[in-house]
Length: 74
Image (cartoon, rainbow, N blue to C red; front, side, top):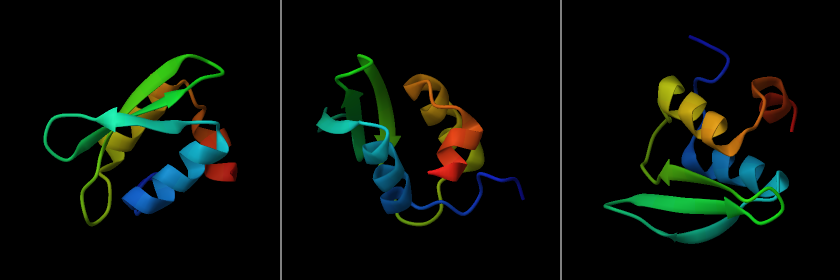
């Protein structure tokens, strides 16, 4: 298990809000688009129950341009 395993949707959203992201709109299915007005970055987040797969969380952080360690420290 990696350092990004075990995060749930609510935990991820809470951390993204701390980085300045806001809910932008719903996307296909149970996905949501979040936007950071300061940086102009968008990221797509699946709103599923259970733990977020590590690869999916890495992709979210890459889209949002958030460093892995910064995310873990927030």
